[in-house]
Image (cartoon, rainbow, N blue to C red):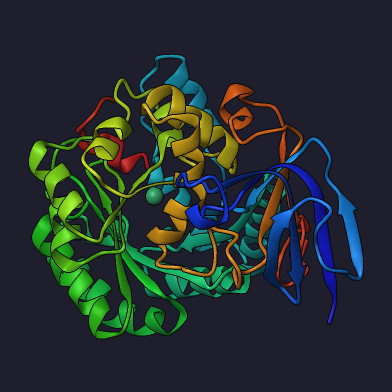
Length: 408
Ligand SMILES: [Zn+2]
């Protein structure tokens, strides 16, 4: 048993209306919070907390639920800085794109995959992120997909089987054969290691019917659904996600009125990943303002991957969501905490209500609005975590084109 009081907090973001000012962020000024045995057990006014084993003074700082990063691809071999530099130089990049990463991931020893993913997770933690979702998807064959999920499972409980990222290169002329593999042998090998199943629905990746078959097969093995939807152009991704009751439709960059209505009428969260638009110099960002106005639950995530969004920073994503997706600073912080917890259907994280898991972050700033106000400044860090982990490393083109799909 050990208890800690974080006291004299300038602004506490609880994400519980009743614990604060009645806004979605449930803000409390001059506050204190007590954590005991990995849970939040008391929230109240500064100086009024019950006696605890430890006491930390956070004068002048903002404390908030640790960010939840509900969409990442941390397990991969190789990097693609040359491709990025070429794209930013306006040169066509014709090398393998995602196929480069698939080849490097297949060739990488498991220790290397583990080391690299652990370093990326440590980066996330240093920037205030708690719970992270991690996908497979750079194997496109049974053994590497399974190996990727083994590594992911050492780092998080939120593991996602993404055998349907792109067609395996061996199946370029046999898409039906690849879907059979993804819904059969590969799923059987991977399902015991995964909580979720995901499909990249896009021209050049998987179509609506293939996605339905893959998500249905995953559901039969007990996996919850998530979808990469409407990233590069209009398509059926959001409709499929809402139809199957997916926890989240991710990207949501190219939506029509029907897509927005479907998200508003369903329990499916719209997860925006503006780091991808930034890193591909996309002329279009997801319209978060339109989604909020329609009453859709919006989440934010990094989409950390070596091809199109090589950032681990939720503060950066928050700043982008405000600047480019039309969210207010408060909406963006809610989306990066409570919203992304909803995208993982987690009720124990993303808020600081009583009984919440003790994932707390702190800002070297007096309010949450500084996250968007001071972009690129390292204000956020993890304050405490339920398992006592901190920022340590475990183990040390244009929209709509198939070539963009290949470069993910
Ligand atoms: Zn992704």
